[in-house]
Length: 586
Image (spheres, one colour):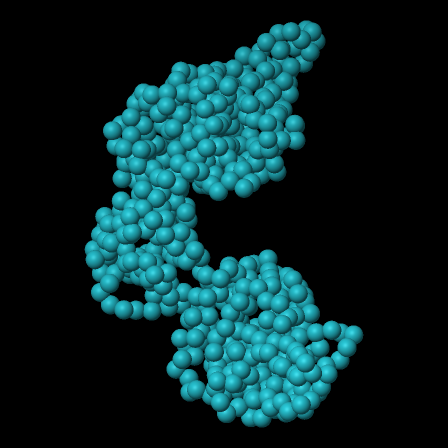
């Protein structure tokens, strides 16, 4: 086993929670506005909207459009507005026979008198929003809608709901612009049975939508989009110090209490943080999504009616088992040798790459090793990407292949085209391959084939390469490492197996406890590298470049092989061409 300074310790494989241990005892010390601490931009925009007196009072929020988000935004807006003086808006409709008159607002209990409330809805129909006129036994009845209850206050709606019903949006926009809501007949073919005075309207509007919905809104109504205030419900929090983590924990605690769950116990936080890092893919970033937090807490609560370490770990293990059928069946194919993956021995031109499998409709991705092979033969220097030729390789994969080839040609410093052709392929891959995370593995397989130096099959590789040989970060790292570890563990760990990853991916690690324990016991290894030439000694046992003038290295072996092939070709040429070649060289 080659031990290098790039080898990670078990402490590197999960977020370091011990340095924040004191935070967990301070969560309940004082009552604070947890939303303001984690969503300052949103809070500022809501406050600005509440104070806005001129222009069109519209706030666009980039966020999810489900009930949890809308309710949370509406609740915060209601808290901001609660400090305002109570006023009455709208009016009172007095109906005598077929005569309808509007009187000034005087009684807050009247259905058409608004008190400045905040209302929200994730889906609305015409009658639900604007109310309706009913005629029953020749008696007129006016029914209020959401807009009447929110009169004088704020209405929080899903943007896609209005985009799906453009006439609804046009009527709402016109009512806000005119400052009054006019009654309309539900049947366009028949007018209202009586004349009904328009209701004075004072309304602030918050529209929530994702980036695609906001882009569509800008395209359909560019003038109003330009006048609107914009903010975001931030999906994650950058953790730079203890105060940031404390704010996140208090936010999560408040989400639990709002859902009528008990406050989390002190030992609940470490496993929640590890799962949060897996969700965001970054040790310094934690999710703020209330739906994600509630799912973890509700499932933990179902395990034992408390939020503790044991209940959360039990919930996560149960969920993983429940969702693991497809991943287990595909791994069985490897263990039964229906998909050939070597985890022992040495092979020239063959390497274990790491990939992430995602199926539509399946709740989570999982990692699997992929056998990448390369063969070389005398030729004109063409590198054949079989996946691309078979139209199974995406554009990003093709780009990674070309970058990898450019780096190798530059390193060889050839004055003429490479006299070898190569063919690289993902073996037993029958679906589209995309992404550049396999370019480091493909480079190592190509170097192995050119130098005729075998690759250690006990080590898998992931990472992308730039034209200077720098190793760049990739996604799905935890799943990739755990996928290879599972295969090695099922076949029995040898103590020499492991994975090579980009050094800039260390911050993304939050591995399962099985992997952490195996690394701690030196039964599995993880190396983090910055450059492609650091991976080659680990895989082949030989350095890429030797500092000694005549030292043995992979680069020299490739150059010698090229020189030998050129000499063989020269010896088979007719003597006039050989003489001409000698003349050109001199």
